[in-house]
Image (tube, rainbow, N blue to C red):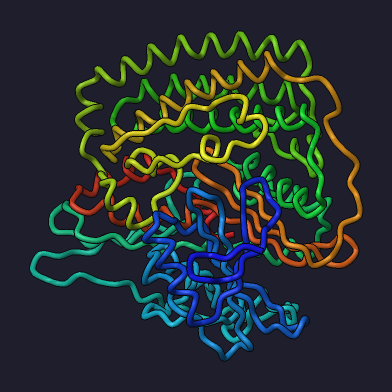
Length: 514
């Protein structure tokens, strides 16, 4: 048992990253969060659980990250009438997480903003789906919801609503712009249209099978979520996957990062008026996905990572294909990067556009790739390297300008680093088993999985139930922290620049809303 600087008892928590769980009272939660902030800590996630069947009321959990790992603060509320402190006063990104906690569990945080976030009039407003006594009625009439957007008033101020349905095959989200002329004064988002009850659905899965649902939280991050879920289950079970499986997991993760960055670099060129970039990077992404399909049976690598190891191995013939692919991509990307850097029109759109200063990024908790483009040097592959990253010595890509150009530069750097890592993994892949048998799992154990996905760190908090069931699973996307920062990044820019700024972050709707 450890003791925190505030004198609180801390117990070790199993997981791939050093972690500890710390019970806190109502009067200790905010001081603990404030101390973490002052020492450079960051909010990773905030969620709650219904513990009334264990005579423990409700448990509010706040996951914080610092240079030593993860700290999980656990605050118990005796019943649904008790209120929790407002963590958003210290970590602004907690605002929407707290509102979602109320919509799903009825746990109130003492914040000024009590507007619904996850509730979209799709279930009775006085019912809370993540409570254990929740009964999904065969049918109910959806209610009518009026969402009170914040408005800017004054001479010449206009309002532009965009969405939630967009002119493309993308997920729904509503954006409300307050503008003067074409200059954006304020942007407010309304998401949650894609809420699909994943956290409730987990309760009907076993620990051994839940990886399939975890890999479908956000399709472009299926590897990151599946690996984080596997880490959590393996922490609970007390097992370590075979070395070959660990190296294959890293191969999957880097190929996922590669494909997503290639796609985004193309779309960023297109949004900057350079359709040639879209054509070339779309071609490279498609070739990458086809290699995934040929080698592992799925373009996006779904269901390749399972608890205890991996479900797909790499054959020699496909290893040779990947080596050749890496060499070819390095040559082509070097040429395309030079074209992007020398294209005056493109650089005019990229530079100073959608800037997030390092100071603002730190204050708002900007995470992942976008955070690294604004001077936030955090990457789990480097900070807490799990096997095989401890042997690969991944290089972190960072920038300090925090604009679209910086986010493009970080993407290029990460693409080249992923190609180096892929080639190294393929050449050094150890022999051996790829999966261990799954043991019996004790009930009421909590495990954490924490993986650096291409967008940023993905957290999966998992609690085991009776007979190998899932009692509670909370998957958490970095988009929760980054969507509010996008609202600030667009201020002072013109409306036509919003698609470019938005794509430079490329945040997840589905991962955010679950």
